[in-house]
Image (cartoon, rainbow, N blue to C red; front, side, top):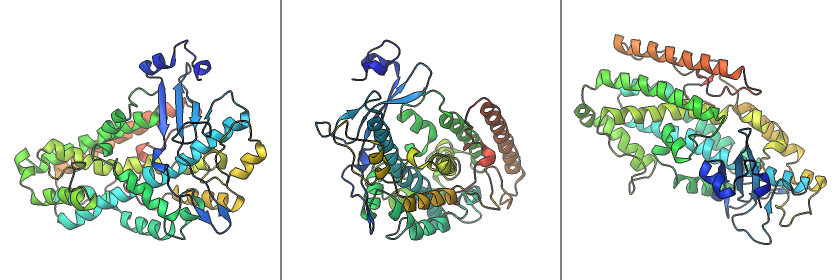
Length: 409
């Protein structure tokens, strides 16, 4: 079926072996109840999209199935189908992506996870503890913004509940399903890139910039850990740190029966990695998945927040009028635009990665470590700026001078 779209003269199996085939599977959405507002019935599906890295090193879709189950009523749409069929199939994939992105990638994996770390920090670490001092800039305003999200975005009458394909009950169901795949290692940037087999994906600026940010944070955190912990044994004997880590696992993540999250830390290296994951999640990860939203969702057909007609079950039955009737109406579109615009605004007094104006640390070695950290971040920012000069579209969401310290919006 896809032979005509493979440009290297290889079979699909050969392209797979070469690492040129990718797949995006939205199985999290299968069976989730679709939303219904007083004036609209919305529709939701769980598509599967096959992607191909072509000879120009562009990753493009080559096959789309709009459900999890193939069959006569679930055709596989291809680029050489009728232009309206193919256009609508791509819109369905991007609509599903909008819903998974908002609820899982954004809300769960940055906002809610960061809140778990923050609450555990307040419960177990004294204000004079060096790890408290290290983390406090990275939890600034997080509980406040999450409370606002619960009240105004994902509540029964919240904005997301009005503009999304996912029903109110479905929001909880999607997050519950995603929690089963959430692990500590998935918060460690190098590990999640490797797990998703994205080490060699071309022009993947998220990976390239993210790795440099992760390394800079990890070097800084490791320096601070070595200042206060003279050996692995001192980490093991720190009852506050051990309580903090256990709280996150057993209560924050409700992970008492499994090993998805560590329940103790035994070495300085483990402590440094753990704290790097906390800081990276609250700063760089959130920046990457939040501040590009208006750029990508500002053109509604590019990522419709919902669909008003069911996905086509046969080919050749879609025209432009059907597409227009499927896309969100004017009111829903306006609400979506206003929401993503607001979510991508920075605070007037924003504090960016590397900024520690309150200076909780008074020890000179830590102050020197902060200076070194800032210098590394400046080098990363300059290299990103230089790289972007050669791009048609800038990728600046992981430039350190644009990464807020915490989940604050």
